[in-house]
Image (cartoon, rainbow, N blue to C red; front, side):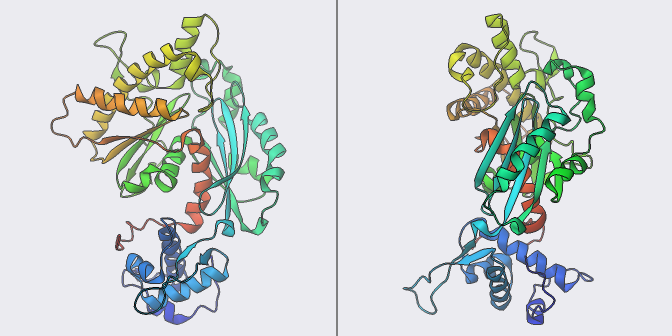
Length: 411
């Protein structure tokens, strides 16, 4: 974005009164640039529409838009004629105006993606393993980073986001890993170690919270202001969105969800952690028990597991949906949520059946006294965590929470 010293003072003079005393004009301008870019993420808008949505004067919008066009961040389309007055010129994000890289470090695989300014995934590289080690991640990033950046304007690359489970060294027995190997993550500093390879700014976030942010910015979460997000991977995690912002808590562990107590389907009256009822390691264990051999890891929507082990998948859907219905009721009794969005590396048909079954299981629970949220399928699947990692740099540099600024909503 532009931060030129020769900014026209008339822009600052026309800024809305909500700007706090003591905030520099340069920071106000930068925030209003972010506000305009955030609105354009929702689609092309004219200057007049931007003025109404952002609460800025037409003059301020015009000058800032001119600067953003000059910086190559937005494009002006063809004038729309046929109305009274001057033709309306739609403004939109320029896809090649900015690039963002995202690295997902998961318990069964790593993924490195490159996205453009619109959030579209342009390139993707993957690595599968039995469990992650710092050495494997370093080798993977060193091997694919040059190819990932091939063909883009490097000055427009705005850093790398890393999404990974916090406390990755826990639960080695569920991964079949040696505790000593996972213990290498205890003192690992991804921003430092990976920074030696990529030499760009790095931000790090919990993988499930990052996926929640991706759903909020790029997916079905865009239409909700308050929702819970549940991502079912090898383990289970998620995020909470309040007032259109992801809340991760002071240590980043908010909405971990895994330890949440739910009924044990095998022993009525007993409680177990949600992670032992609703996660892919449960499905893989069910398949292994049924076949007498280790189940192939479920990496993404294309896994053959969903078709080859349909009976196990159906049993897993029953257990998972009942557990998530209980978890939803617990969440709804604490927070007023419009929706609970459920996602994971599932084929669309499996994700839709899971959300339908959760609704059915909720019907059997006593929901009096709470606002019952909608159960909504996620839209990003196995890409959610890597896209959420890339979003970290986009959010840091170009986006803003318009609700926190108390600016007007839709026209």
